[in-house]
Image 1 (tube, chains in turn brown, yellow):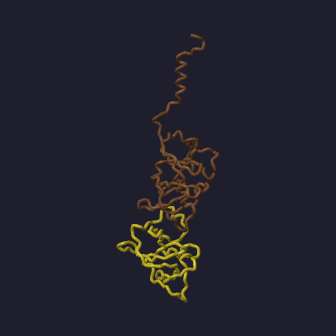
Image 2 (cartoon, rainbow over the protein chains, first blue to last red; image 1 turned 90 degrees about the vertical axis):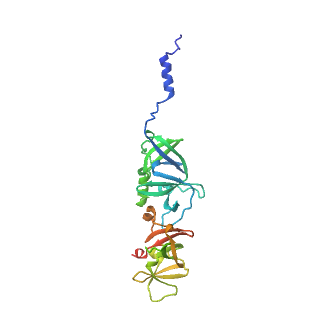
Length: 172
Length: 122
């Protein structure tokens, strides 16, 4: 044995460090539906999203703000469709690009929500949802429940109850 | 609402380029000839739409006050099937600026808004 040789304890300690932190499999998780609007990513709690709808015809109605796209027929029920871009103050997507409608239920209301894409539906540990940073824009702040990091994106977890209620009251 | 076995008996009409309907029970008469000496209000102004285009117009005589409401043609008696009639979704009901809209019918020719003229005229 030379001075360069380590003890068994040192070797095992290094091995443990290399393995990374132990993940507590019993930690509570939440399901998130992750969507994108242009290059911005957002999420809703999975329990608030009842369905991701295939492309369906939207009936435009007079006297509605541009953020209220119209209504859709979902197996015999009529639901409104709101444009998430407009509600969040983001630029509208280029016309003709594919998009999706989420069917959301919150604040005793149900409505379709137009997004560009549904990126993922996944379970995350509750501890992975961090408080919203102070740098978040004033307009978004009341709507954001937290921040999650996923695929190199910082995802804003949105409060759908607040979003619907604000919209109903004409605040957005 | 006045129910028929197949649905709701209505007078369908156009206003501001959109399709509307009013329950038959609210309409006392339809006057296609040009009428003089009676004050008349346009459906667009009651409902809250921009002024109508100068197409051929018909007057509906509405309610016990026999109020004249001018609408655009085509004007026709019709029945809206019950299974195509819906209440306005909550967000539409709250955010729509039109007045007196009670229901929405989705028909093969597009959406038809069912209007309550006594409410719209208040």
